[in-house]
Image 1 (cartoon, rainbow, N blue to C red):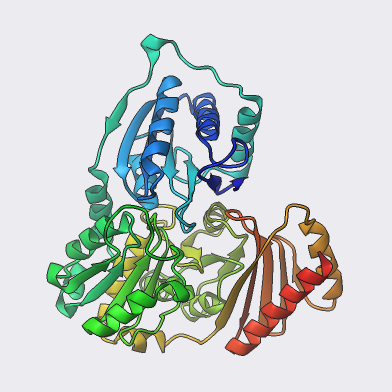
Image 2 (cartoon, helix red, strand yellow; image 1 turned 30 degrees about the vertical axis):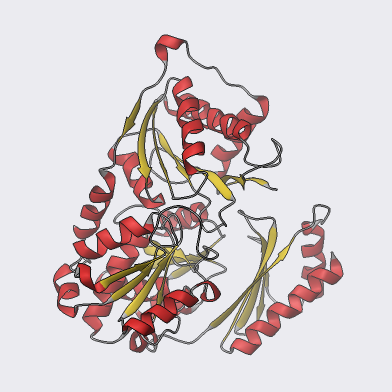
Length: 461
């Protein structure tokens, strides 16, 4: 059982007591708080909503719609959709904000309310605190019966999203069509099963050359939905079996993206952003941003093209804020999140696919050969589940003291530099865990650094 309130939204497990899980009562409370905040902040009584394919999606959707309507808010319901599609729909509809019903990469028992502002971007930390204060005080004012809000269902935004991607100068459908790619997609039983094939066909990939596994949108995920190598065994095997050119994996709300090479090996989710940035920067030089848990290969690629690289704290809202500060032409996160400001300020697997396929087609290389053009850094990604009584700040302070002879960054958790290697410790915004990421030129070194810090945490907590 869990209920987590953060800049990533209101996220929790389904089933259990109110206040400890994402119960129906909690959905009402936080939706009402968001709607109240939106009306007070903007005066705009229109909200766009959409959901991924989770089992609990229809129930959460009904509660959210009814609550917003009770506040006198006009709801535009996209139905089954993606996070980036909802983000774009907010501005297209001139709405005051949006709510995405998805727990992203979390397992099937989770769901969440991801909250957007009028720009179709995640609300800021300050705005999020205001929403939580309204929820805690239950300071809601529902409207009279003759002022109830309306609900409009609109499934046209998938096509609008894809059209906007095709209109980008950096997306070349002709070169993609000429390559005649054969592609396997792992849609993880969510909306990627609909949106990714539609995009691929629009890009010029022949429908008969697209194979979708885990294609039924029922939310009973065939494997852990986080697109990590250990969860992509079936995709890897299918790519090899069919002799496909590449495999594509997305998460349930289609804002994270990674690729599988023609031999079944992983392109590496960290290198999704690296490869796409390499292509974008070759056409449009400028600055880049990624969070400080991401590979330093992005910095290498950025410097190669004459730009400057800037790190940010983890969290999409933090990456976007830094991107705006430094006028970055592309940015994102090492978890396979691509943010292209020319389209919108949000992680978008669909635009990532379009840019990557254009890059791959232009390169006249196999995806394995393309991966070989980038530096080999290895990130060891680990996590430790938190017990409720653990004082994380105290643990981090003790680790900081232990490694005081090394450069330490405390902007977001604790990042320690070891010559050319690093380790980043931080609590998750989405799960009750500490994440431990370490990077080195050698896989064994990265693993050993992570294991050393995991031992430190267990000894010092």
